[in-house]
Length: 84
Image 1 (cartoon, rainbow, N blue to C red):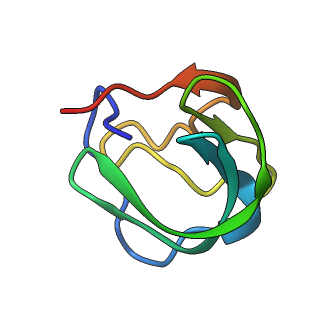
Image 2: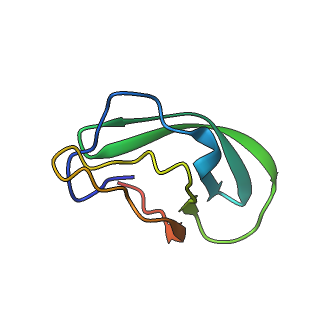
């Protein structure tokens, strides 16, 4: 996920905040971290889950923080994923 401002990169992010659906399967997150404006996830496949590719961010904890603003990112659900 790419955010519109640089993020605090001091610590790993809470993996329980992130889920994804990719290629018809639900995924949980085993590792999450931020670098500059990008949050990267290591994911583990779960059960079949038909539908469009998407990601959900559901804090708390509010750990995705803008490095300049100090503001926490708001939760979002079912955000469509697009191949880069």
